[in-house]
Image (cartoon, rainbow, N blue to C red):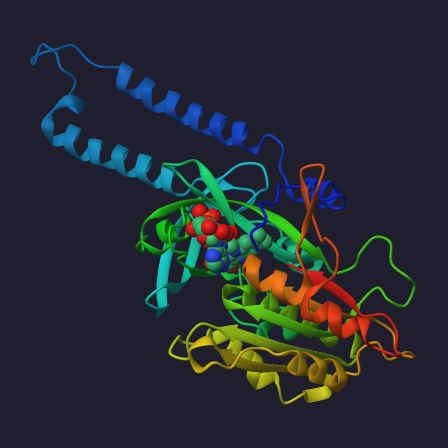
Length: 375
Ligand SMILES: Cc1cc2nc3c(=O)[nH]c(=O)nc-3n(C[C@H](O)[C@H](O)[C@H](O)COP(=O)(O)OP(=O)(O)OC[C@H]3O[C@@H](n4cnc5c(N)ncnc54)[C@H](O)[C@@H]3O)c2cc1C
């Protein structure tokens, strides 16, 4: 989670980014504004003579005051309804207004952002992003001019079953925890509804269908998701994607989330509650969330992971699709469960498999491949 991913630097990204990007959209917007400003200034330039007798009727206070109001209103309306083609793009930061903050604990909140300017992307815009892979956005701390990644979670997971837009009104909802001594997370937690933050993206962190994949293994089948803290957000994205896929092809899928949180008193994300309701396993789709709390000394142990891997019959041959173990959370958490990530040519890499998951897979006597992904 501590990677500082660079937009479009992963090999598969540029193509998708160019689909979502709109070269020159800022200049286009600027030129619309300019032509409007020119029209308004022309109106002001046609100022009449100061001789009250020779003043035309439309300069009397009876007319100028309402006219000023009308002009002011038009200007206000214009600048507040400026439309842009896309609510976010990977190249430029777009202003977003914080529309709500829901504290989940003294150090964490669910924050909802709406684009400041209206955007009417094509209906496929969000579904392309959601079906591409796990994704995040970058949010800027304006004083320090630094940015960090945050993972938007669907407002509701259930809607993805009906393939309805799960980002209604282009809203982005993020689960943020303030890190002690951190630069961006305390800044975000201190924002209030109405405040503006700058957002760009998406950054794809895991592609659901890798380019080089064996035939029959294009889609994900079962996932054991080991999450620490806000690292649970990609699990919600993943569950929404798999539910949408299941709705299309009817194939069996099972997600087991092992979710480690600091304290049992932290409120559970509404989306996690939804996932638990999906746990019934209707029609071959099942999500199961198991909670572990630091303050209750219930940590995710090797046996918990082994049990989940066995229950999901991971690596069992004869079925189509890939089985994946995902590890998502703070750096120390990922190191412990799957080993350190690496760096190559200035880019973060997966690094060697290690940690608890590495031990489990090393000691497996039989069974097919299980993919491991450190997020
Ligand atoms: C792809 C991706 C998606 C992410 N999604 C989310 C998300 O949805 N919600 C969210 O809250 N965060 C998320 N993060 C983490 C986020 O980007 C920041 O790293 C985090 O908010 C801390 O940033 P900061 O500027 O406040 O702290 P920094 O100034 O970067 O760090 C300050 C200190 O805290 C340590 N630290 C940093 N992060 C953590 C952590 N999580 N736990 C413990 N110690 C830490 C650092 O090592 C450093 O010593 C994501 C990261 C990535 C790479």
